[in-house]
Structures are given as C-alpha cells and as structure tokens.
Length: 279
Image 1 (cartoon, rainbow, N blue to C red):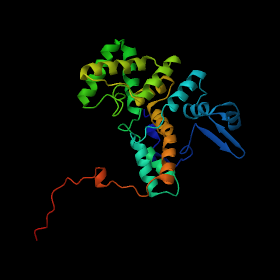
Image 2 (cartoon, rainbow, N blue to C red):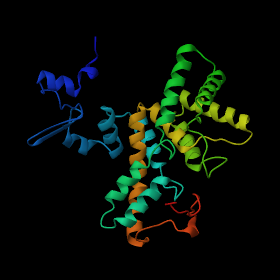
Image 3 (spheres, rainbow, N blue to C red):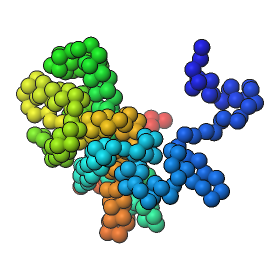
C-alpha cells in the first residue's frame, strides 16, 4: 500500500481531477478578520509568548518548555558574526556592492551560501540522530560508537561533521561558550557525549586538536530540544542572517561599489599560455 506522500504527486491530481487537498497546511489558518497559528489565535501569541517561544511554536507546532526556549535562545545568540571567515558574509557583501539600492538581494545571496562547507549544522545533526539512536538501541559503548562513526566516514571518503575550524585550531570560542552554557541547562546530552568522544578520538588519531565547532554544538543542542535536521539548517541560516543584515548595510554605506578580485588580492590565471588558432 502506497503511503500518503507517494499519492500526493502532480500526476495523481491531473488524472483524478480532485484538487481539494492540493494546497494544505498545518501551520496557519487565515480568514477574514482572524489569524490562527498552530491552533492558537495570533493575538494570544503576540501577547503571551516571547519571540523565541513564538518561533519554536511556528516551526515545531507546540509551545516550548522554559528549558527548550532558553536553549534555543542560547544557540541562536551564539551564531554571532565571524568577520570574513564565513563565506556567507563575503557573498552578501559582493552582491551588495553590485546592488546597493536595497540589502535584500545581498541577504538572500548570503543565505544561499550556507551549506555543509560553510558550517551548516544539518549534516552533523543527521549524524548524531542516526548514530546516537543506534547506540541507544543496541547498547553500544560510547567509544565503540565513536569508532564506528569514524570508520563509516573514512570509508565514504568524507570528513566527520561538527569538528574543526579553519581559524580556531584548538577550540572555537562560540562552541566552547555554547557547550558550557548548554551544560548548565542540561542541554548537552548523549548526542553531545558522542560528539565529544569523536573530537577526542580524532584528536588522538591525527595528533593535533580537532575540537567541536559551532555547527556541531548547534546540532547537539537543537536535536536535544526536538528539532529535526531540515529545521536546524533553516534556523542556522536565519540566525546568521542577522549578521548578513549588518554586513549588507555596511557594504552599501561604506563599502566599495562593484567589488572585484584583482591580481593584488590573489587572482591568478593558471591555464595554458597564450596560443593561436592554427588556420
């Protein structure tokens, strides 16, 4: 028997002609003079919930506990700016230099530069949910689980996500602070233990520090309070979006119109020497 999602495809609707449930949502209901979000009247949300509580409700569908709200607020506050170490800021400023009328295209472009290489916590969240779930289900010791994770990523030819930083070689300040404050709120649970074990084991293996980075710490805390990897990726991008606003506006006001990469800043041609078509 096919599941509901497999039945919801354009071919089924075109063939059956019944479009009654084609556009549907569990998020909000808007009628004339009334707005309901996740079942709650909009007025009550505005009057009784904080910004963080309202975001949690909007994404997860339920009002967070005080602990969940504190951990979410903490995680989002720790996604503070990283100057030009973050590719998203560079992308945003590049676009702003060419489109100075409004910061919106620059902010959108910066958002698109969030990914596994630029520090999205999505991949690490997927890893922690999968392997910590296996560990809990099968009763594996922590050290054995860490070795299994490392072996799996090695066979795939991939790096273990959530570890290391191009600048902060011995410890990323944001991740250290986030871990410390989250631990005070009992927010560094079994997934955090697994990530710590991976950092320790890989540090020994490589003979140099490979600490937990911000994406890894965010993945631990956000999975701890119930978010899934897709939601975590979006929240991380939106959280860093505040820095993108600052960078885009600064570029428009104080930057250099139409940024380029001159030879003095590293532009190099490494192709074949000049040649001519032989006819």
